[in-house]
Length: 296
Image 1 (cartoon, rainbow, N blue to C red):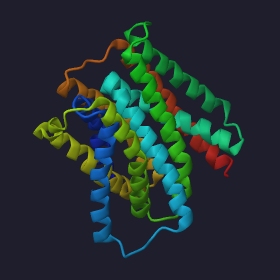
Image 2: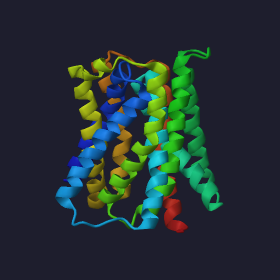
Image 3: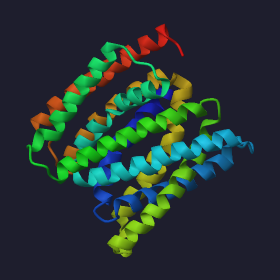
């Protein structure tokens, strides 16, 4: 079941980039995030009522949940949703794979301790891949490059999220996820209100059947049950084994992008993506060896 839930979750998350690309044509990106996590919060709340025994998170855990919600939901999805609007789902999924690089850098700064040179070398290799992906459409600054840079800011936000989510390891995963989602939505609402006031979109278009289907996909399957299934996979397989499935997300996104949106990545995206994945995968291996040798 752990392997099954891992594959299903990665499949959903890979397609989520295409879903975002479709929905942001109608719903402004920040408002999309707010609607998505309102659906997710409701889903998690119902699931918690059905499965929990009335437990509550302690005050310290709620504090970390609020900070994690700000970085992992509010800032991450503001940058990701706007970024996907300007770039392709394939490039977005590849660039978001740089999350481990930001996680390592942020952790090193936080711990005031340097990682091994091998880890930095792999990070540099991934950054070369990122540069190739960003410049694959030419050197002229365009909305495409702006989108790529926003996706990198999303990856940085997830790195910050990881720093605080580590403080919640000893608490119930479902309760922590519910609390994180709640705070992420609370922080999203003011940004969404300003966006709706400025853009004044046609709200009636939000109710188009195709848009509603993709919204439910994002809110229920990707953010609601997706987190529940992922948490189960982590408990069943361990964080190290389950994290390897993350590397399949760009593959799913590229295939779905070509089949659904008919976008064929350029050769530069394939070359840069290969370098990113090599750097990230080998970098993670070196990080694990280093973690075993020098435990915190």
